[in-house]
Length: 206
Image 1 (cartoon, helix red, strand yellow):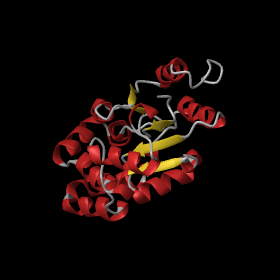
Image 2 (image 1 turned 180 degrees about the vertical axis):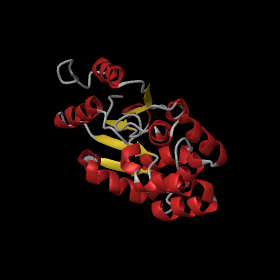
Image 3 (image 1 turned 45 degrees about the vertical axis):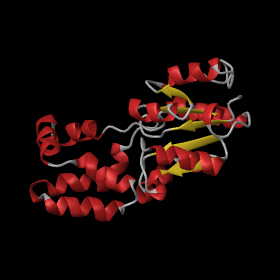
């Protein structure tokens, strides 16, 4: 079957996402390591991605750990510095596909309010042909349900879809459904894959 839509993860595919790097810069690596050992910040973020309120979830966690209150609140208050920078080449690939009439979907673990906040800084987040945002769906990758929901809503499945994600477990879940997949390790490799699939020319993928 011909590929009929291209599915992009967002974090570390279209926007860099590295909270550890942010905290290393702001509070130093030693304090960051101590904080991440004391507080499961990624579990906190999973709650946001499952649809819990962005501000309420982070501020409540901060109150549970008063020794780290100010630092935890940075996850919210300076969030756009954590979700940065945009990966320009990937965004160009998205635009190039759409310019050829190829639908582009998001499939992302992202909170409701945090996505809206990000979209004020990254307008391309409002330009997908279809959005599949975990906060609204109340399920996160790699749960098979989120892939099933995309298929049911779009009417596409299996090898009609190609999906890029930076996490091997998320890619494996799509593989299991028969999707074409690409483990994203940088935009050039993704560009090359889109060319090899006949979706873009070399010039279009530049």
